[in-house]
Image (cartoon, rainbow, N blue to C red; front, side, top):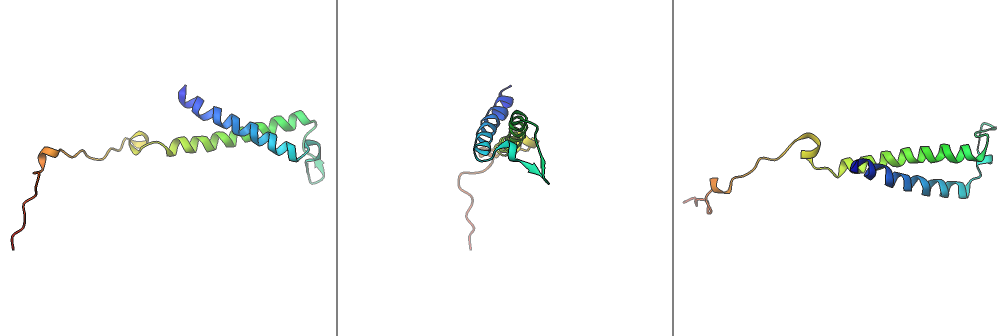
Length: 96
């Protein structure tokens, strides 16, 4: 549950900010593709853009969560442990 919250809450905030910023610059009624209007009404444009932005935000957040994990958490790799008693305090000196 914690991982889901860490994934979806920041991506929700990113999507809300991106949607607000995008539609404060562009009017959804003026978005066209080859002369055809993309959306029938403004609400569908807001909804589609918000869901797409939420998906990209979730992808970004999941990559960040993956990169912050250690190698052991990802694939079970752990460096070998060194036993301090197995080695002497002062290594022997080489004599010429």
